[in-house]
Image 1 (cartoon, rainbow, N blue to C red):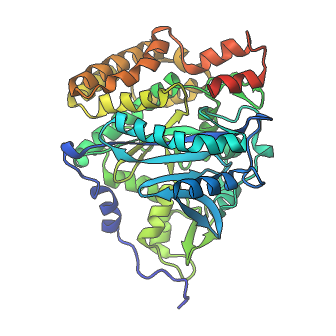
Image 2 (image 1 turned 180 degrees about the vertical axis):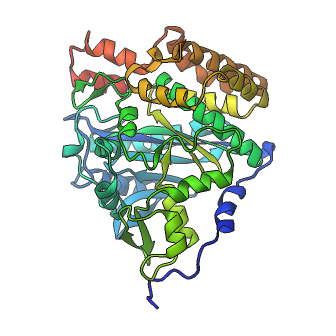
Image 3 (image 1 turned 90 degrees about the vertical axis):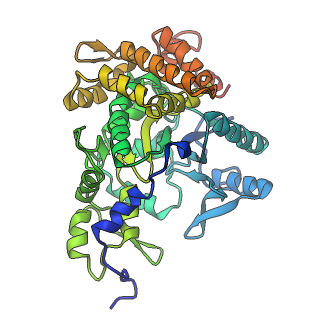
Length: 441
């Protein structure tokens, strides 16, 4: 028997426990977030590389030393930092992802982010780096952004298909919102509503129209890149059926082709030769599937909304001007209030899976100007904001204030990208430095 062989075979009951262990009473429901930012050189406006005296790796070293964070490594290379439940990790193109332990309120999350930003600012200044809250690299493209030295990223880059998969991996930055659930029924209701909300949220927070120093013709080039990345594992999970379940989610993950497995901390590339379902049934060489294999595989499945022991809502561009908290406030206001969910279900009841799927393809270009059937996305966005605000006011935690930045834009019928496009073609005169300065102010 190979020394690399997995210890025991996997059964479906073990997989199901990964989801049911997330059940929490409503009183314990929290809000979580992960968001990525682009490391941009103050001098050149290019993406800062991993290596070099003033590269991202040494930035992490300096921050870890200053604030007593521990290294996260891969094959002895620093790929992130951790302190308690909080992490700062690197995405493939050196994007910095901040993952904060879930909190009771958005105020708590913002306080933690403000604290970390304050700690990091003097180090960023020393390294001449800005962390841009924007959806896509404004000047550098994937052709001149090197992958960080993380073994799984090399395998992913070689495998992921789709004409913009390299853009997605190396150039983009987004926001993820994490939501708790009480039981399977609650989880599935929230999962279904979240999937329906995603295209509207992508439109409201579209923030990546300028890429490679030029206007792309898309308001969210980041969302476009996901449309053109490996449709075996991206897009909507399932077809928004009312009787969706953990088992049916697991079925979708099992059908997805595998990219690699780990044995003794060594990645073994599989390159989509078979699905996880086939791996469970037949094994591979001397290896049988185990629960760690499923966790890894499920983490390499990238739907718009991903199920874990919480719900992870994924497809919003990174945005500045405190609008990251607007994203969280909308989801919290709607998904943590049964009456609000009732209203959203009624609002979107006339639309079917194909309508949402078509909208997902139209939103990257048109954002709020898109339509679902004959209904304006902008009109629905206004209704969603109203529902979320009313719900947050009822919660009496003063979190409705986080809606103010996006409310101001939606009242004017615009998204963040519309402001950038207007200024780019107007007072900025297509000057990338002025764009970066605006985004980092």
